Image (tube, rainbow, N blue to C red; front, top):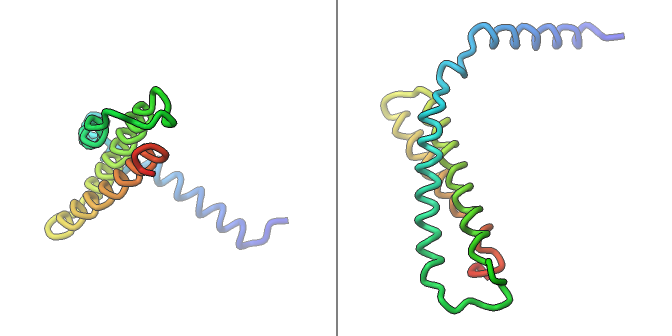
Length: 129
């Protein structure tokens, strides 16, 4: 009981999937080693930044618990790694010239926003109160 529009939609989707499988443009641009490098670099920057916030704290509130530093030390580097992942995929769009510069700046802004959200989430209930 499919109507003609549904059949044409399904056939179009099937054609697109076959075309993607034949061309596989995504996998040609995907380089796992460079992706890991971007993610490790993003996580390393995030870890250094959160250490700047955490190391000066000597007398913490007892309500935070004994292991209060573990949460920000886990969440913030994950956010940094995710920011590195976003930057990797943005840089692989393939633009050149002024568009490439725009993409790099956009990736940096998105990385900073993701890192800021990770810091807020990691420090929530402790230093960010």
